[in-house]
Image (cartoon, one colour):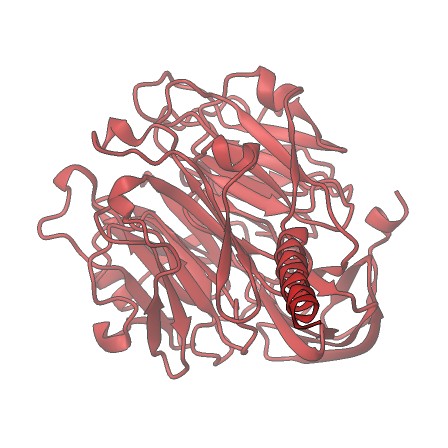
Length: 513
């Protein structure tokens, strides 16, 4: 009898272990790689990927920074229109398609003139959208060859301003005058301390004071900087000045040789944490925001950065369980820069919800490697897909692959925002969603920002996984103007659009397709 009891206890323990493991792996998303279509058939040296619904049809399109890169030939940047179901078609626009930018990977999009459609600035040139997805050349903001640029309404006048970096020259800012023209301005430390070692900015409200702060990731290749410089976090004083945070914060003290960084509230505690890439012998680091601009560095991967060439990172709830997951794309052929580089696989970290992560080690989306990537719901089926570009440092792959998320039974919300008092693109808006995830209620938080990682932007649509919850108990939207809108009992599995100071409603362009 004792032997039987011991046998059943052991069996029960084994089954518990199996079910626990299968439960974990049951939440790991599976992706289908799209191997046909324009993005695969055309050779693309894509350094930058930018998500934008440029024709306003409810399907997210793709703008590709198709610059010369390393050892390539000059090519124009490209626009691909989303036809749904992972099908993208190359679009030729007379104003955009003829432009060749030798080093610029592309630029973020925003409604520059507040007329309800997304416009663009590339290499100092403004392209205005006529509302149907056709463009005309507007004013020239600057002659300086920007390597990255972000839009942010610095003075809350309702018009987005432009912040740029010119590699090895410095940081520059331009105020949008609202009449199609721009004026160069000085933002304090952002200009005087930015020396041009950066290829990317990332933004978030790091100190929870209602405005967006900026992390400048400094990467000085081939001894371009002497001495090497650490990253810099610029705190927005809400008076048209940005002040560099003291290195004692724990985030910006060490030289990391960082191509980029990504903000996200991975622990659902109400402040923005940040994952920072490293291309030296240091490790990539997750910096947990402890409040009061203090950060604790956490290494979630034991491998040194010297063994791999990480290019880009982004947060997203890939399995709709209520917690942000992390995806990092890694250049498949890092030997161009580091002869000892032996790591070619992308990294996907699934958030367990307890502060730890499960690393996914299989599938095309891992084995293919990559450079820039973007994540959003490209087929409008309720889960986050991923698009990965190759071709800048990898001489063998010159394609852009789409990886469609196969999904699961978890619920979700997708929210777009439009400012009325705030800038119409709603850049800087924070959205919080409360839902019962598992046995507890969680507050999930997203912000409309620009530049995730380096040379990439996931676009302005915000995605929330809800787990088994069939509704969000509360949705709170804090706009850049300071206005706060609150909504309750929002049904899951829908695409919504929120208008500042008005209602939140179903997005008819998507829901009625």
